[in-house]
Amino acid sequence: MQVSDGYIFFSNGNVIYRIGADGTGKMQIAKEALNIVGLNVSGGWIYYSVTGQGENKLFKIRCDGSEKTRFKLNASDLGEAGGKKSFFGAGPSDAELELYKADITDINVAGEYIYFKTRRSDGYGGVMFLKIKTDGTGFKIATG
Image 1: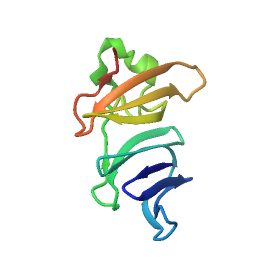
Image 2 (image 1 turned 60 degrees about the vertical axis):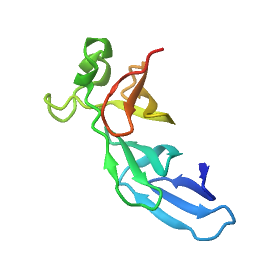
Image 3 (image 1 turned 90 degrees about the horizontal axis):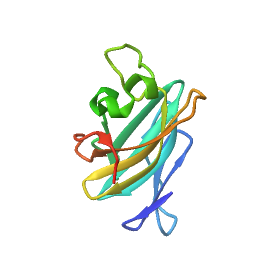
Image 4 (image 1 turned 30 degrees about the vertical axis):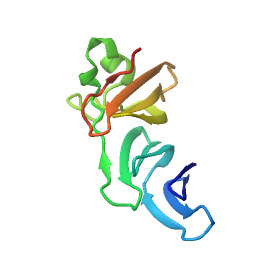
């Protein structure tokens, strides 16, 4: 749950809602096929992740439900330091080394970056902190 600009934003399973802080005007903002596991509201945008059935995705959407965008989180952009396939696992095709087996949680927006935590979802453990710019560029490991 997040509070911003007089509204409460929350997810209930696979749906994000917005409701006035006074309890009126409930509105569905987004509906996904998978569970929404992370939510952050910043600068007129809702940043959220969905997970389930071996798929994990990061999105942003305007607080009014418009301009939904999926971030392309390609593990090959991280270079050798990211562990590539060894950490994330291959996606549906070897050409798409997306964050296929990593749950995306703990989303936080600071300045021009979205910071988030990934944890392998296949039982092998491992945590990594990553960041991507709010415009979808600059995907990399978040280091001091």
